[in-house]
Image 1 (cartoon, rainbow, N blue to C red):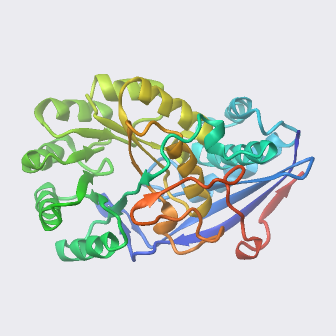
Image 2: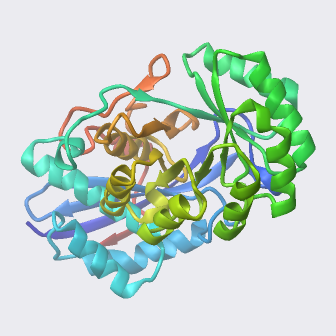
Length: 366
């Protein structure tokens, strides 16, 4: 089996709940996304997605991802899509980093692999261990009143796990997080600064929230600052943006004493490296979330397969980004129901792309 053609598509994903606001003024109402269609010489097609959150969230931005997709696509023509580790090495031999673009091609190749053998991706990466996935959503930075209204609305749909965005003024952040949590004592909350705090700010916020027991996600940009914070604070910590490889994972556990890690396909480069890091986290006895940087139906499907094949004892939760966004290129599948999700059971990703929704490709390679 060989890759005979690749098509690139572009579209915008608008946030379904108004403005998605994070620390230090980072916000957006829509984000650019990219779909790749990889076709083999025997007619099997696979789909992948690469979406960006913003250029000041991670060292990646929309135009850079689109340029990287065009750089990598010709390299994959003539390759066997089932040799995903080989393709990872091949892409890295041309571009260092650019994990977000590599993610789209890696997912598309796993989609092809699954379709070629008539199995969902989850079965190819260990089998389904978590048939019902706990789903979480983020509460963007806003007023206490707006935040409480948001949780009321989404909890009526069954969501019972929320990530409260913080990372600006630590005293106000802590007061807001406490007010939200006190308004919903039956709901699980944790806070996420998205690396927005200095060490001093993080110390103030953690001290103010000390008695809540909330998990504290990625308070500072530097892993070393997070390690220093852990020595003076008692809240369990989740590492996210600073974990890119196995070395970072070990440092997160043994230097930061992190209770958990957030593993994102687009930050690592696809299903192949994500499964490797997830398995290492499981071996280390760490808890983790499985998600992505941003995305729609295709991203949600890819994430669901990795989450479903994860040990339920270690899986904190996952996210279906197609619940966060308005555009649905695969019929709004997979779908969250009553706060739980599941991986599609069809071959590959298990979803069908509506070509009428995405228009003509912006670039083609053969």
